[in-house]
Image (tube, rainbow, N blue to C red; front, side, top):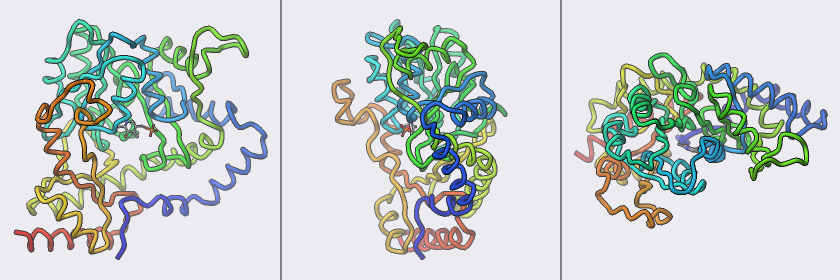
Length: 369
Ligand SMILES: *Cc1c(COP(=O)(O)O)cnc(C)c1O
């Protein structure tokens, strides 16, 4: 057995003809940046997330940067987010000149904790970025309440959670603005980089579009200093095909997660917590083990790949040393960083592969007891 953490090729093979056709159609059209595929994909993404507007960007990091910039956030402002996420979340805050302020996560959901977030609100706070980590929606109602009370923006980092729901509503359009990544390994991944900003605010959508196109509405006339951040026609055409399958793929992820949890919860491993208000899309299936390295090595020896998300929480990253955080500032994030193991998770994971992974884990916990 040789089981990867994720298998992008299996998904590609299932759609190969359709995708090759679309690629040919786009290249034949001679239109590669800003064309009908991008326009239609933006409409389809707005519909999918139940947002009024969707503006595509070059990647998910840019989606966050442009969303922050469009909300008028910059030097002197503070933005509160989780230290237990991919670097880009806080990088985007620093990139617009604002200061990332971290608050610890909830020990069950691994998402930014609303109470600890509120403790960090100051006069300078302009926004909160809850990250729907590993595909599980954060407590949006609590964040929206805090935002209303303190007059803040809520920017959802939905890069790992497209298709997930919070109290029945799709993530991305619950906050003031939502950011999605189409990095190849994401639940909806292109064959290159891509991202999108979704929002119900006409002002934010127009500002993001203006910023993404060099601050220009009329060709060669520039109102503000912007960026060059665009999704291309090829990626849009590919993503349009894949978007039609996203719900079915997410459902398969949920089924596989349920199988893992059913079998692993009796072992000395902590399986993902299922909050009754949300439907996670299991971008990653994460277990906690006090013997993370031993477990990862054992699985590797048996042909099962694992991942480490994330070995270093953001407040301890060298790049953020200027913020002055010390070890044990955020104990829950730090424990997770030491214990989290990602098991193979992708829609095409076969039953026999999953049975094998479970049997290897049973053997490991039996032997290491
Ligand atoms: C992937 C990811 C991003 C960045 O997206 P890119 O498209 O790689 O720039 C941001 N935040 C989170 C939580 C992510 O997982």
